[in-house]
Length: 114
Length: 113
Image (cartoon, rainbow over all chains, first blue to last red; front, side, top):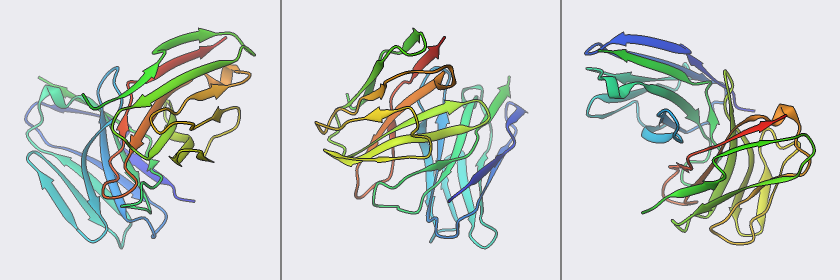
């Protein structure tokens, strides 16, 4: 079955710097790749997603890139702020538009130091 | 307010004592799912349901049961909890068509002694 590897497990940056989190997936049939942010004491919340027919997607300070050939995708956060501190999860799914199963990566704990 | 609610939020119990964690959503979602979150392992799916009376196993279903008698509710049942089920549990829901965004509940921290 699908396997998603996420790196790094922890990431510490200075406020204003950029942060990059990378994920690789194993099943070439996966076609939907969301990113979730989990703040302390809360459930994960979708922040951005990308489908396999798109190479890059941007929403203000966050962007996601997808390389289908290499089977990896990345989350980029620019001009980081203390409120970006959280755990971030990548995920992969084969069933976009059908409420399909998500396979999550192990998570990255991002710390933004003021 | 559109939301997924879980109860209880925290629970400490002993081995073998049956328990139920409730999950309810008010967004008319067809798809509901339970995950457990453990350090270094991310979120792993326990069970999911694509509609009323339709449930299926996820990746780690052993020791758990679910039911989906109503569209809005999806309780997680531990018939005989064991210490290896100590974890943080999340319920999530989404539409089946149009969007794959899953909405998560606030989590239930379970400790089995």
